[in-house]
Every structure is written in C-alpha cells, then in structure tokens.
Length: 280
Image (cartoon, rainbow, N blue to C red):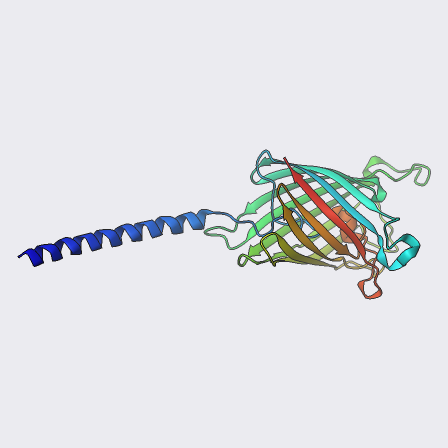
C-alpha cells in the first residue's frame, strides 16, 4: 500500500512539474518572438540608409567624412588634402518615425529627411520595410550662372523603399528600390528622373564588429557617372557606432551619393572615410 501511495505521489509530482516546464517554455518562446532585433546596428549600411530607425525621443548627431581619391598618392597625400564633410542631426519622433536635417560640403547641400517604418520583422512579417524620403537644396547654385533660376530649381527629391531581413545573428540583407527627381540637371549626362536598384548586406564577424557592403545600379545612367559601390566596417563602441568606409563616391548626401559617383574601383579611384553617430 505504501509503495502504491508513493508511486501515486511521484506520478502526480512528475506530471505537475512537466506542466510547469511546458508553461515556462511557452512563456519563454512568446518572449523571444516578441523581442525585435533590427537587421542592422547602424542607421546606414555604408552610405545608404538601413532599415534601423532612431527610437522615440532619441537624438543623434552625425559626422560623415570622405577624403579624396586615394589613387592620387603622395601628391594629395592619398586623398587627405581633399575632403567632403556632412554634419547632421536625427530625432526619433516615435519608435517608427524619425526626422533628419544635414548639410554637406558637395554643392553646399542641405537635406531634409523622413524615415518611417511600414512593417517590422516580427511574428507575421518576414521583413523589415521602411520608407525614406529626402528633399535636398543645392545652395551652391549662383544667380550669376543661372540668372533665371528660381528656388524650385535648387530642389531635388529621393524616395526609397528599404526591405531588409535578418536571417540570423550574423547575416542581414536589404533591397533598396529608389527614385530620384532633379529639378535642375545637365541633360547631356543625366536625366531629371532616375531609377535605381540597390542591394546591401551585413556580416557580423565579432561581438562589436561587422563587415558591410552595398551596390546600386542606376537604370537611367548615361555612363558618365558610375554605379555607387561601397564597403565598410561597423565598430560598436559604447554610445556610438563608428563606420569605416571605402567607396567610389566621395559624396555623403543621399542624392549626390546615388547619382554622382565618379570613381572607378577597377582603376583604384576609391574614397576612404568614416561615419560617426553619437546618440543622446
């Protein structure tokens, strides 16, 4: 009788314990499924925008710098004598919407941007989908060169749909269909409406370092400018991400980078630089 009683007690305890374990596993699984992990650690893959957004009330300061063509050698000290710089700020209005403003050396360009999440890679969505819109103002244009110029002639626009997927802890890929409209352009070397197809990716090689790359094909390219190709490295250091960049475009602004790449990788026309994001 005692044996039967002990057996019954052990049987009940075992079943109760199994039920608790199953319940805890379900809770843990639910928690894992609900934790969102972005495809990219930085707001840019290299120069192009990633699907990562600033969190609500986060404030970023951006410093982007591109030196000159390294193929010039000692003449320009491997590009250090010729540089282009962008300074900007980004503010997270919500977790899914951020606004930005920046100013870059090339054409003394001001850019105003809006980035907004459409879908998040979580539960029922296999992708992150983000919209990105920019209005750029070319403040370098002179009335002396264009006496009939209006303010509208200074403007250009960018619309992008960024679609990314985080496959695992190490690898993420992103597609970037893009449309650009320029109010003022040189009809001999470019079009006022340009369509580009872009792809980018990230491969994490250590806890704080990843290798990134991106490439855009300009469907409306006249072969005067090159398709932008860039590779870089993300280095996470506390409150900011530091990105080393090698590109065939010296330009930091979104529209300028996509449509005015002048370097040729095959000939060594490469521009070295960095992006620095500091969050507050």
